[in-house]
Structure formats: structure tokens, C-alpha cells
Image (cartoon, rainbow, N blue to C red; front, side):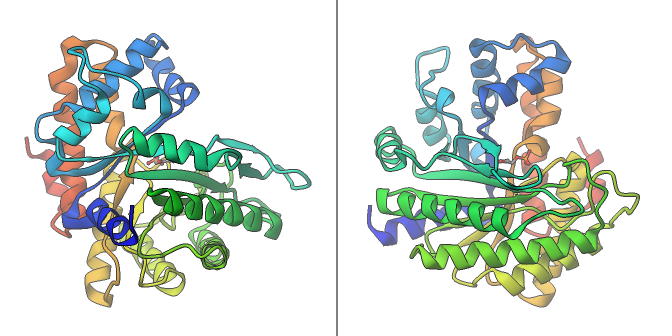
Length: 344
Ligand code: 13P
């Protein structure tokens, strides 16, 4: 695939207010989501839940692309059509999670580094053949009294940059995700989160430039600047939006094709309200990139509870999913208001 096509895919992933559905939970993570609802932790249940999401009527109006886990990439619908084809038929772009998850980073105070570079170019080639057009790799940064360390930021940024380069060489648009955790058990303030975002984005773009990654042919997936989940500080959307826009404008090159936020443990409505406010602030201060969503939990939670393991609930669950998808699209367009949460 040539460079121009990669840029076109990257732009299509983030334009018109549409955003990404992160449905790439590993088997273990998806089972963890099922467990409290007593949904059987089987491949058939995971397949069935994802088929319900991907076949929601009109989903492609709000969702530009779907990130899949390897298991889903190989699965079919009840009627035999592949889930990858279902995504394409519904006007969306298929993508694949390429990292192999987190491991403890040696000689750090409990920090983690993401693995998955070995054999990556062969995996990129295989998924490209299966129809994937983009990929994702997630690095995490935890905030603690002595963390993040320089060596953890450096190692994670380096791995992300190597991954992004390998993707671009193999014809996939890399989603470059660096999540500053809000739910790692610390009570850090919004100001601390801001300072860590500065350090993390600075190391990240340094590493991406070093590896020759094309900024135009990638999508950045950052966290929003929010206080730690255990903090007593409660940040209003306006504070989150001001801090997030300031840090992004400082450290993200304007050549990047788009920014698609993760939800990171925010509540459904909170993630939508914050995205909306970020877009309002961006309108005022000027913005070089579209700012949209690439949510996992904040798009799926309500639908998962409504579905609850039974296809008899599929229609209600699809309605819950489409509502979040539509409201997040409106937020990305700066047209969301909190009253819309109560409209039927
Ligand atoms: P959340 O929106 O649930 O944080 O998930 C997004 C994601 O893709 C994490 O890697």
C-alpha cells in the first residue's frame, strides 16, 4: 500500500465526527467483563456479543472503524459471513490489536512495558491479507510517588515507535496508544496527570520521529487529562478540556491525521461530556486535528448490561450501543448537550 493510501485510511478513521469502536479486548479481559454478569466465559458468547454490536442497524453512521482481537478476526456470523466482512459491509474499516499485552518492566518500581515486536512484520502481513487496514498497540503509564520513570517512558515510546514503523512499512495505519492510567490505584491530581502527559507525549513523538514514522499516516490514541480515580478532586469537563487541549497542542505535531481518545475507566456520560467540551475548546483555540473517540468500555458497557448473555436482548442492547455511538459522534462534532442523554 502506498503512503497516500495510508493517509487516506488514517483520515477516514477520524473524519466527520465518526470514531472507533475498540472491541479488541483479549480473551482474558473480555471474560473479566462477563464475569460479574455471570455470562458464560466462552468463545461463543464473546462472538455472539460482538456480532450483536457489529450488526447494529446503521452503526456505520457513527463508527468509522472497529479494532478487533485476533479471535474475532477469524470468526463468522451465525449465517456464515465473516465478522471482518460484516464490518466492511456496514461501511466501517477493520483493524487489529497487535500488541501482546503488558509485562513487568525489569528494574522499575512496578511499571509495565508492552510486548509484541518479535515476528511483528509477519503478523502485519498476515492481517493485511485478511483485510485489516489499521492496527493498535497500547502502552500504559502508571502514576505513583516515584513513577513514571524515565526508563519506562523511554522503553514504551521506543516499542510504540518500532510498532508504528513496522505497520506503515507493511500497509497498516498504526493507532499509537499511550494511556496514562487514571485507574492504577493512585490518587494523583489533574495537575500531576497534566505533567505526566507532557513527559509521555514528548518521549513518544521523539521516538516516532527517530524511527521515521509518518505522522500523517498514524492516529494518536491518548488519554484525557483527568485526576486519578481515587483522588478527591473532581474535574469538570471544562478543566479536563482545557488541560487536554493545552497538552496536545504543545506536544502533538499538527501533521498527525487525527486524535481518537480512549475512555480509560470514565463513566459513559462523563467520557461523552469530556469529548464534547474538548471539541468546544478546540473550536475556540484552534485545532490542527480532528478529535474523536476510540472507546472500549464507554461504548460497550451499557450494551453489555442490556444484552446480559442472551440474544433475546439483542435489540435493546443494540439500541443502547447506538445511543452511545451517536452521542459520541455528536460530541466529536461539538453538537452534544447533556439533555440528549434523556431523549429516547
Ligand atoms: P477504553 O475506552 O475502555 O479505555 O478502551 C480503549 C482501548 O482501546 C484500550 O486499549
